Image 1 (cartoon, rainbow over the protein chains, first blue to last red):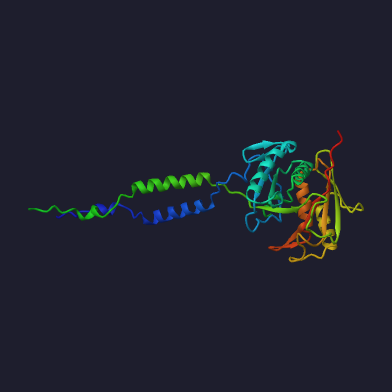
Image 2: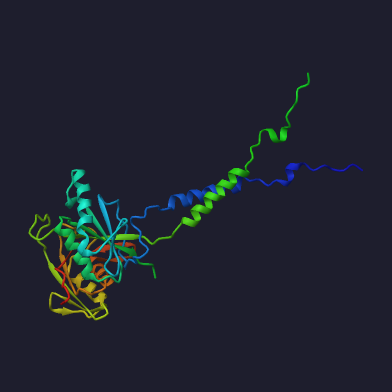
Length: 146
Length: 162
């Protein structure tokens, strides 16, 4: 009786669908990944609002400030208090002036902790006003649907 | 001369193993760095320094909201125009604003419409400030947002007595 020979190919599965799927997954995660550390700070828990909608486009000349609940301000890698924020803002103004703009063109984005005293936020806004900033955005988180 | 023939099975095939290895590494990297973050939005506050060239016109309907805090920084009382008190009920404040303002999706803007001035105790927690701003800015009707007041400003801060 003759024995039937199996070809070596029979044992290999078809890899194409798996590779397709894996590439799709990679594409999905790549699109959603956010590398920017500027607008994130682990110490800040934003207050929520049902009206929070992302702005239509990125703000022009954004200056992101994180205000911790003890009043510490984080700007990029720098840390300051409300009273010592002036040098950091002066640097930002110098950048704006180098681009033929003024402080009034800058957008101050305030990301304050939900338990931070409201007066501190007011103080911060006043300090910025003294230097000529006019446009402020209070950043909030979208309220989770109930 | 004898010509050596390559086997038909393996000649045209590339080894997929190394590519799959790399692809899986990439996938693991993206999965590990992926963070689900809630959507964020902004409330715009336009506040030029007093006395400097302000482009916005005089408010049609100035509304002054006084926010009082208790010792823990929670909201104790909401007083509108020094007369009406709403306790700590933001829903009542919103109903009042709805009555006061001719709302509508295309109604107010940053340049026109009623203006709200927030006068808050220094220690009031920021989340209550945001709740107040939410109450006066508008409300949700289905998926649409009905805008009430776009112009928001702060009164000078009330520094705690030293």
